[in-house]
Length: 546
Image 1: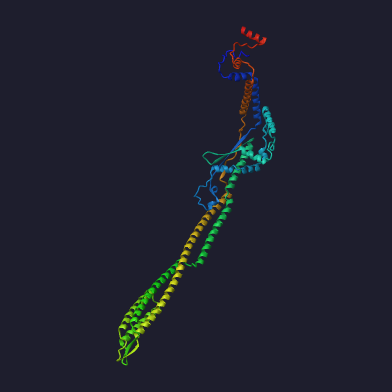
Image 2 (image 1 turned 45 degrees about the vertical axis):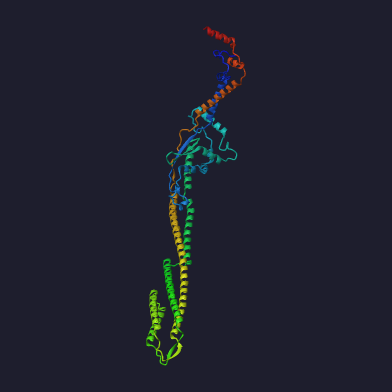
């Protein structure tokens, strides 16, 4: 057992952990120090080889300025909707999503060529006679490693992947778009294996981004659908006007106000005529009832004096005046120059005079009685019978007239009802035409603005412009070979330490007093020192003697 390493280590107490960190870690590393050193040297070699296999990378940066204008806020619905009704301004995030379209990368690949983008780096292309020898050797080693890794644009591609797809993937991994905080500036950066290549790719990306923005927000592509919507609006206006014209023709509307007023006046006149006729009919029937009562008390025949009866002059005068008034009243019905009110007033006057004259006739003897009576027809009875006949004829005429007036009033009422329906529909159609015309005028005004923007779009530049073109990098972006070397050293050394610990943990020999006591469960009584060679012992004794 090894006693020279643990001379001063006390015995362990019972119940102590069977695992000894010092024995496993420290003694394991000391025991396998050659292995740990070899792994560390292997890690150094691996780090150097890793760093040599990675070519230098250079990053070119550019900046884009986004200005939100009218073109970015246009849409087809803008012809109809109120442009101030909702917010339609694209944000910087919307622009980033637009610029991250793979089609832009494919355009750049088509412009520059997939071979150019996937071309392997040439570390020694700038080497001259003045380049140090170790640098040239390093570049040649890098070229050899790069050739072993792929060798060319088509080397190392997965099955079914074309050069264009691989170039797009390279651009996607090496290109970064990010917004500048608090501004409308977008930073564009691309990392590749040479400065001029990085600048050229960044410039091509910037141009492709600007073209993509201009094409996406171009007004020209929207003019055609906008014009179609404008034509549809114009057709709606024409259809509304045609419908109004047909409606006017169907309803026979020439002048709504004049026609409506005339029909209302005619309706009022007919209602007044019906009322007057009904009043006259009621009076006529009242007189007819009076005559019927008089006929009941008047005998049809009477006794008169024959031979000496002479006409009563007073009676004849009253009768002549009565007939004159009757003729004058009948003449009123044929006189068209009189108004209705005037005719009614005069008829009332004539009726009053006739009534009074009739009462006088009834109370006046027609003839003077004769000396010798004779039975004859009663002239009063005949007169009353004649009056009854006239009143009955007048009653039938008034009934016919009232019925005619009612038919005319019903016809006028139907016309007025139809006129009101047509008037309401006419008003709604006029409002609809005005609404469609206003919508068309508004769309026409906006379409004219879009055409102006289209002219500006065709002649002017896009609202996404290059604030800064790609720069030509002078310092490499990577790789950090020092970090690679450190990572190799750490990895190799860690591997050596791990192998040493694994060897120490899996060993079953009793090499140390502490391990023996722990394994046997008994305390150490004595420890035999390690037996050394005679040369070693002599050297140790000489050292002690000195």
